[in-house]
Image (cartoon, rainbow, N blue to C red):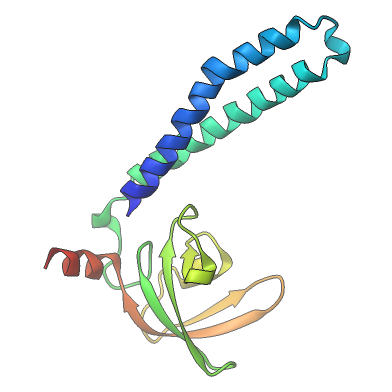
Length: 161
């Protein structure tokens, strides 16, 4: 799964690097031809875009490096972590919910894909079946009991078999 995310981020990185090397220099050169830089909104906009692109490139390189360094051998086999699917019981609502812990790039809360860096994701990390997870958000506090846990290793084993 991390290969798909890595490829998506790599594609965005390549597009931005191309924009930085090819498109933006032409835009800046064209804006410079308008003369007076103090009142040249095209020039200012191009420079702002250039700075934004440079910042996003740094961010993308960092995320690609982080994703590439996810070592399945270091992912716990008996507790919730990246790639785990958990069935949780919410006693207050008397319902079960299922979440899968994913990277921020994969996150889709409506589909049950919860980022490991979100309040819910953080509260679930390291939990085992039978544990209680307390999720504090700005709006409320929710308590969940972990009823089932399927780790990344369980998924890899079923994919291989």
